[in-house]
Image (cartoon, rainbow over all chains, first blue to last red; front, side):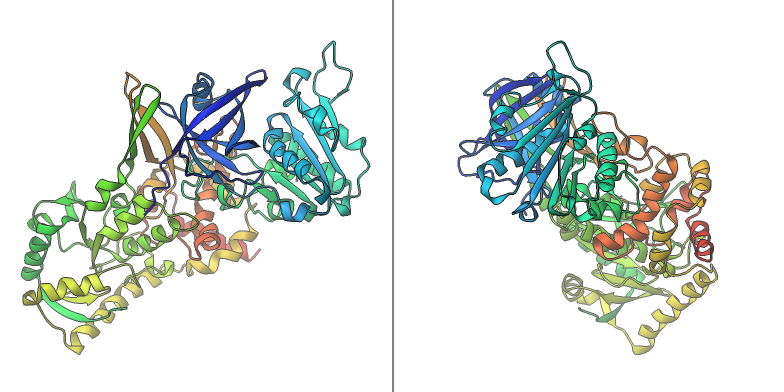
Length: 275
Length: 352
């Protein structure tokens, strides 16, 4: 029997400062025979040997069988990861979970709503959309960050704007900021969308998704047209440890991306549902 | 499935266990501080063959230990060598003697839980390298309701041999190929069971069922739809006021399987081990993520998590309820929270 708890060795290929306390790591499996294939929205379990293991959503693909994760320095494993350098060895398990609904999105308009670090798993999707641009209708990104400094992927956003519509807002501006100030829901007033023919995808802090879900329902989005990526403690990633469950549903197996109609059906109420 | 019957004397049963002890590690009921515990024994004579009800703690720890090393590693410069602990496990052979129907049924639940989308190699290896020789309860414990839980007093599957005591002999029911092998390779210790002997097992079971029927609680599987409709009921807040969130019910439960994983490292930061340790859904820390967010802050939400897991979520996840009715959570609860009383309250809510 395969031991699904043993991580595969991987090497840090690149580290990029993204925002305060936030870095993007490019990671590649050491074994030449292992292919790393993932779907946007899936996550991995990353081991920093000597410290432990934690789940991270995949923030994008990179050339040559490598992938990227975008990490905020916040706990034991991330603090240890931030001390690592290019060329250092870490451990990887996965990818795990169910990502964004690529088949459902095909041919549809896509409204992407992200808050803070929640843009990470959506960046993987944005890359996929841009690569297959003709498969999708109108695509709009609404992104809110704490301050202009906290905006992720600053260098890539101008490129994205060649292919998709991008609206930004910050909670608190600075002297250089000429854009919107306010929470991400204010951006929903700026765009024209047909809720019946648009799929809304969101990822961000629970409080953000709470208000975005409410707003989308007010705008007339049917439950089936709203998707959310939920953050829970996915310790094992394989449906065993029980820590990530909501209403008995394993977020690591059936999520982290859920359709709003599934979340509404949970008997255990969650903040992200907005009700 | 194999369903052959034999007979064995108590004297020969000890001989059988000693013979098995040459090839297998033997686990069975021993008496400590006036309670029955399942432990490893060196000699079959240490085992307590006759006792009423079930042991204080379940046999879960022999499949999912309270704390176990999943693998060890050594950090050498910029590389790491991983030593998988599974290999050692695959070599081990154990006989668990004396398991009751509730605990035997709990193994079925653990097997299903640990082989859904992925296979947990540690738990499943142990279930495959362990022989189960169960023994029918002599009497019920004060908190037993295995009949309503559908787990006993006679187990449906997951045993190799199941014994019913008939005076100084045991009726032997074979439940697997492995069980049949044990009988055939120790044929000198067994005799044929008469139809009369076989019929006695039903009388024994009936006696226990009659006692449990007096509890006046419904079959647990019938509570599913009621529970889904009363999640917001105030009765949960009443229990939240009593519950101490100590987690004893989780640790005494034969089917509570949730765990935490963390690494332990030597002071020189060279050798490390990945540890899996039982966790409790009653602990505030259970759902805490790195950002500090806790998803079950209210005690009532944590009480509901355990009860709904057993009676609702488990049905969705593995197709069966996961309370086996052993009543251990009732026996160990320092706040005297009684699952049977909760079940009665749930039935009353149904009328509202």
